[in-house]
Image 1 (cartoon, rainbow, N blue to C red):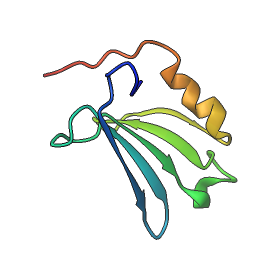
Image 2: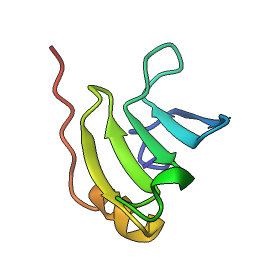
Image 3: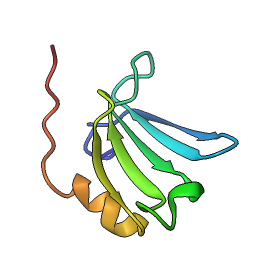
Image 4: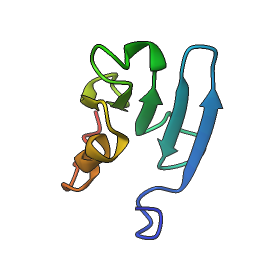
Length: 80
């Protein structure tokens, strides 16, 4: 997606209880998507999740590769 010019910037945050990879369209905006790893949820809902800018969890699971399949489809960004 970076090569296609849809995503321009990213950030990696290591917090006490989770790790977050944020994807930005522009540096000055809020992240379009966040890929979150929460080890405390590993045995319950799955450690990995993809979260949209609105806070909606798009996909959650135990394996990162399966969670990232949400990006295989053409995602449409709706602006208010």
